[in-house]
Length: 459
Image: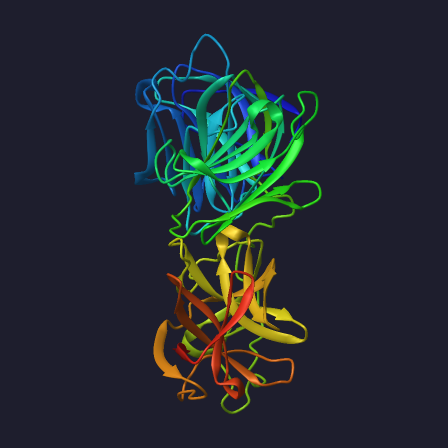
């Protein structure tokens, strides 16, 4: 796409498409109402498809629609958001199934929706209609600012981490909440507070602070400082964005699901922000169709007892296939094996490690799958997800592998590994069953944990 693309759209609801190679597009539009943006796989109006309508219904509200069907996935009241006499700037972003739209100069969207079955986006289309013609300028994005005002601007979280850069004299405030509002429960991280001398972690806006750390000079009004925030099962970690060193950490004994973050400045400080939350560098979109994958335990085609084949993809027990994906992507039809302590679904996954193929769990918000091995939890950005397979779990224990248990991998020594799950600290977590060890291993909070009582996935 050119740096700036100028063109006009008539009042005919006919999209004009152009290719995109990143996870966002920014534009200016001059129209009385109904600026429509389509996100598609190809240069035409076809499913699957996202549509973002800005200033629809007489310039009173905006919506996100999927596959041109109602009801709307989400709608927001946005009276007067467009203007026929002047250009108004907006952006649309997509990352891991989260589609968001916001105003120029603001990184926080005014509307967003998370698609449980995302698809790769290769083209953007624009049009106007319902009595409106439009003039467009499609261009690149920019950073945004926050005023000296203790009021959070909120956005949806797309992963179990948030990376941002802040330029300001002091008081970089970041919050994490279960809704796009300043409500309890709520975590707050204040970096460079108290005239740039101290940083804290606060819970539910209450004192005393959970963590207090002297940080003289941590912020600078003339240069950006990078930070990474991570959360998992109640453990909130703040890292230096350049070195990765842990600055502060706190574990909440009663964690809640985090769905939004907020940013603000105050106490005499104005801030400039760059937020990398919406599009992670290196993230790969889902392929248009499931790639062919070899089953670990299938005989050659035509051999007695071999698995049936559809195309080049072998079908394993329960009509399931293992699909190669990366970076937190969840292919359509993925088998849900449990849920994290935050309530997020965990998918049945497996990954290569040290010469073994090890069953584990996919945590989409973390951008990776986790497998247990050698006493530790290992994150894998490249993994396989079980698609279209069985979801029949049978309780068992020890080395008692029932007939018909679903094979999920093999150890580095060639021993078959099966897929199991256990209840642990408010989660239902999937992992590997190793018969010779008599336990189901799961990865949890950085460790490999073994359980003699577990459920096993059946074909």
